[in-house]
Amino acid sequence: MLVPGPVPDPAGDDQPLDWTEGALPRLLPYGAAFFPALTQAIYQARASIWLQTYIFHTDDVALGIASALCDAAQRGVQVRVLVDGLGSGASIDTLSSRFAEAGVEFMVFRPWRKWPDVVQRGRWRRLHRKLCVVDAHTAFIGGINLIDDRLDIHHGWSAQPRLDYAVQYQGHLARQTQWVMQRLWLRTVLAGSLQRRLRKLPGPGVFDTSPNQRAYWQELLDWGNANPSADEDGAPLRPDQPAADAAVPDRPRRTPTTLAQSLSALVVRDNFAQRRAIEHSYIRAINRARHRVLIVSPYFYPGRDFRQALKHAAARGVQVKLLLQGRIDYRMAAWAARALYGEMLRAGVLIFEYTPAYLHAKVAVVDEDWATVGSSNIDPLSLLVNLEANLAVRDRAFARELAAHIDSQIARSLPINTPARLRTRAPWWLRPFVAVAARAFVALAGGLKNEY
Image (cartoon, rainbow, N blue to C red):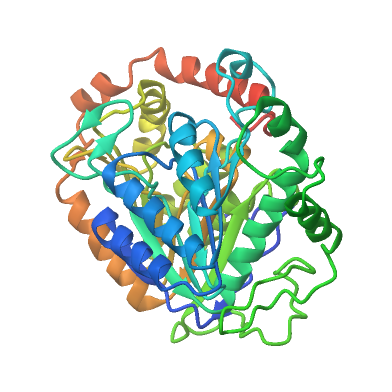
């Protein structure tokens, strides 16, 4: 039996969120809002564009963004694009050719070799972030890949767009985002340059002797010797220390003490110092909830600590709602979520399945004063394995806007509120089967053990 009341904040290897004023977050629902905003920012770029994404497809929408990036490079803007080797595997040849002609620096994160990589430990650690920073001033983050949101790579075209969100923001937090992107870019250059040379894959190498490669050596050697704060006019960002260091002098940083403030924080998950940062940011927010928790995630299979936080919140009278996928794209992912339906419903958590279209959003709102939008699902792959990035926001207006949008989608969704619906989705054998499969996958991917 659960005892009403908060559970302790998780202890771990990540630090409390580092809140910053002045980001001015702007919610962008669906590709209909995101793609025009991103394209406009790219066309207005004067100095630099950094873009990292899981899927960069070759449909008309994606190729339109590719053309905008090429135009920027041809007018002298430094453009660096990093895509995941699994998510963008089918597009690499097309993108590589277009970008090479235009002068776009293009690189693939962990190229996928199909069957040899399926069983190789750690190869499932993918670049799942969706980030773009223009002129070290305007940034985008969220769950939207560069593909038409009516097109699914595996299931074809749909009449309705996927439900998904992005956020546009500015200022110091955008510069911090660029620092994170540059760190991964340089690490990928160094770690993969020999492999790219041997396999003739796109991307710079540091084992050649051309001026471009020598420049990369210098950039790597300069790591740690430059000011991390870019000028407001778009001068390139150069890292010298983690952007979370409070010593940066021009940073508008405060602890969230009053809800009148608009505060934002970048939360990234990696496999080094921030292995559970996103998971812990969720748990801390849920532990502080007083009225309601709204969570939207297509893939939902959190570990014990996360589930306990949700159940304790419901036990102390917080309204907890989960919006999960009803139109299934990956059956195993749907089974994983449904294996937890009984546990969540018995604790008083309300569950809804989104059926109008595919669900891809990874967002949450707590008490209408805390919100998050990003790339991280609430499953072992995102919370323990992939490289992910979320934006956390303490802003009443932003949280209310996102909550209203989520509520409108819940109104269109199917409630799992009868024993018959539960039985059709969660047969008796599903929970043990999923638990064994999750442990095996986390072990194969090199994630943390004993979470499930």
